[in-house]
Length: 241
Image (cartoon, rainbow, N blue to C red):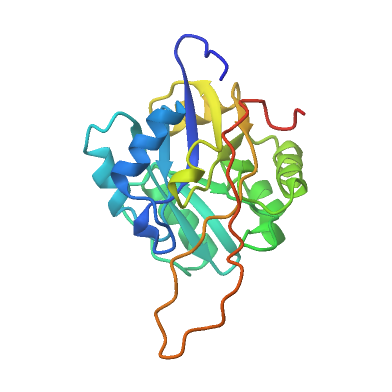
């Protein structure tokens, strides 16, 4: 792991806790893993929920927590960062953007071109050109193909927007897969400014297994669950071999 300049921090801009409903990462577990992996700041971006992020923020667990939310809209998912209150899902996209901004928060595009998940790629250029988007997630550790991250980076470059990285962790093994090395910040404006000088670091890791379905009267036939070994991050900048 590279040494940071004085006053810099490692920031995971996108991860989930059990509050998301499809994750198995407990609050204390998240903090312990972040400390062990050398991550200084985490944006907890649960699906349509901010309760876990607010609880973590109120506790001293060794890692700084910022409150966010991954929000489903009819056009795809958005990230809201620096939130104070939950934003409901499947509101019109423009309403979600207004509600994030009303809280003083920032709107971002997570995994916009990953076809497996609900990215907002179809309207990404329009949203960026309109000024609605403050940042683009240019490295998501769980995309199925590195080309999806490259396309997100190109989107940000076209519109002159800063980029973020996120582990998108849903389980303990995912924490530490990606972060931004950047100057420390205090609030949304300073965050955006610091991103402009940041450096994305990460590696692709397998998707976390989702919660098992409810037990049925007749169990399904055994099958491969698709699990795979997870390696520790290399600490190399994204895109380097």
